[in-house]
Length: 263
Ligand code: ATR
Image (tube, rainbow, N blue to C red):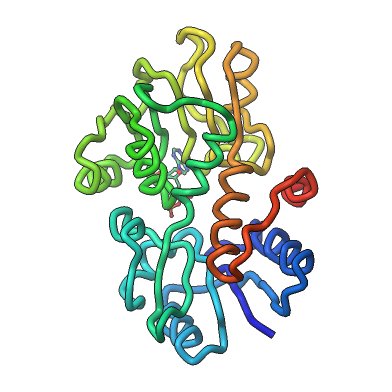
């Protein structure tokens, strides 16, 4: 039996085991996928489990997507450019790190039939998944990418990696075509993002990386103001599907039953 893990801290909320175990069963693979809460000190041992083949693949989530990098032997170009790894496996006896969040975001946007090219994008937040989103937006030819974050240092760091970023002061709302909530605000129903979108034109695209709850306050208010909205469910499913394809060589089907697994 092959063993797969998703590691993070916190990890309770992760739906990765539901998705992977559903596909493992569907395609008759002899494997098991579990979630494990880790501390930074555990990362080195974790990677030795891949080396000695006790673990066959690992998904990495917040806050370790960057921290895991020093323990890996090789990185894909996407992981290098974003300094972010979410999928690990052994390849020619070397521990290889890849980033499927980029593909996840790109495929999700493609499926929503929104054309990013020449659009002005406003990102709120600078957490673990943001480098992947910026990388994907650049690939999709966004005309400009504006970003704001409560902690300024984090957007400054991102600008070192992506010099085309335009930093917006926290609390300000610039002119945009699409806005992405990439903060953790909205995970709890009491959370509010203190930005005022009531004066912008209608028919903007509001996207939330959060998929549980399905409709955050951010999306609800945007919808009520007459805008288009989408949550992060498809992005999450596509990044999982890409990891599944790497590990098992099968491109898993994404249908209504899979979407229902996210609650
Ligand atoms: P990590 O930062 O560990 O990668 P994350 O969940 O991916 O974690 O990111 C959290 C994001 O939500 C950050 O942009 C964070 O802002 P800070 O960089 O200032 O911490 C943002 N966030 C979380 N709580 C917030 C709050 N109460 N107000 C504003 N932003 C918040």
